[in-house]
Length: 448
Image (cartoon, rainbow, N blue to C red; front, side):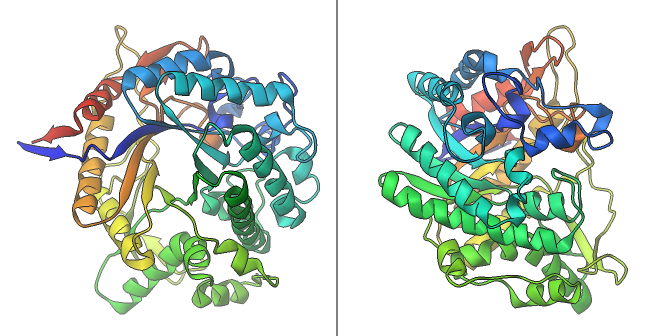
């Protein structure tokens, strides 16, 4: 028996995103986002599911906050629906939408929970997509206008802010691989979007310094870990290229003021140019107070000339997988955190998302998701190792508080520590909820 014990300074939390939980898609002045359009287009989402109702958290937020209070956590990370608070993408605010988030923030604070706001978790107003979306540099200014409005509205109550969630997903997964909204398959579009998202991040940081001088702001890239299958140089190089796409492309500009030249060249060979204007990199590399890391999975990789742009393929080993098919690779979590600290220095890190998909149902009023508990134990053990190795971790937020609309997977895939009946919206706390509650209360857990 081994006890994994954390410092009392570590903040514990849970995370969600607006389109995935709120529902009320057509209520109180909210305009459509790109995810409304995408999910209502046949063939894009499994079973034709949409986020129209999701978890109905728009109406049940007080119940959800009570679950958070009972969990005993310090932080709740949620995102603001841009099209709920600013239906035209720019210009006038929607008072009802603003009031929803004001009420949520007040409810959290009244229960002793610190809000952490994400400004952009992928739900761009459709009206801006109609004008070119993130491919259009005008969207950078629209985002800054929206961000400034939110800082003015909520900066007096909320001190922790995240600009952009998972820019890799919002650019390449969505505009090159076509799996997420807006569903394009255009490498040039994806490269443009990736750059414009980072500029938008930088401009928002700049505005934040003026409007919320006592607050802290960062962004939340997603990261897996590719471990070379062998010591052969070609396998090492293949994994390095794959990681460049995930990590350096979205982190070097922020922390070093430059993009990786090797990746620029690879994109150029595939007829996609990085189009930088004067002042862009200075904006992107504004100092930030922390960054978030969303980690779920990793794998071994090896060279394969037929395996796409980066000539790297995952090696199909007999790792256990979660119900979404992702290998469980907790050691990659430790390696990723160590690598980030070595590469970018002692910038504080929040684990803004970490969790597992297991699709258990309710039986006799309970949800026995021991596999999720095992996953969390493994990853929190890796987190503990990283902290002991000197990585400055400020907090850990489990993904997710609730089963929710899992993007292109619809409602089939469940990541929550609370089960949702999507017909009745009944919430049932899973065994993982109680395990996490116990871990939070004691700052430790046992492993055998």
